[in-house]
Amino acid sequence: MRTFFDELYENYHHDLFQFLIYMVKDRSLAEDLVQDVYVRVMKSYDSFNGKSSEKTWLFSIARHVAIDYFRKQKRKRNRFMEFFDWTEKGEQIKDQNKMPEEIAVQNDEIQQVYQALDKCTVDQRSVLIFRFIQGMSIKETAEILSWSESKVKTTQHRAMKALKMILEEMEEGRGDREEA
Image (tube, rainbow, N blue to C red; front, side):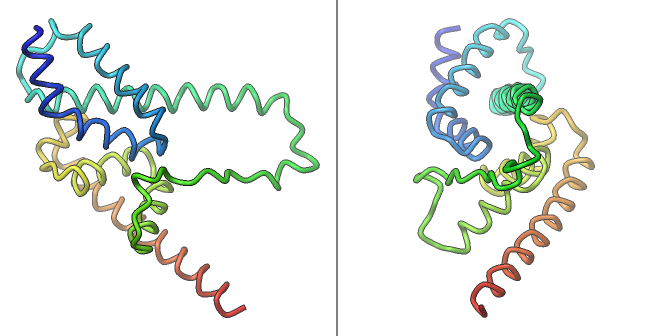
């Protein structure tokens, strides 16, 4: 098991960490989630039967860890919302978090794509990250997500349309500000 884990770490750690940063947009949180992934890998090592590659198995675990995190945050947020008075100043509260320095590239167009990616659904974002940022095939992406290749293609198509629409809306909003 030690050799298996060492090889897994050496071969995929950078890509795994990068995937989680793209998903959660926070370096320290991504580091924590990477550790959670490795803990789950250790716990489920005996159940890995080789039907998929080690890479797709690892990224499937990583995706589930990210989704579990999002669900947990949503439950916390919902509990908080019950106690917060939204009638007066609630609409003025906006999330001012920026993307981590590692992701915020100099090129403004790339930044816009990353911001638009944030507005896609988790499934759309996962497919786009796996396919275009991680460079995985449709087959690998399908294995990681436990989907059919057809579903990956459909989600990718819809994600690309959504991303295009979001980028166009962002561009229109930017144009309005420049004219003012």
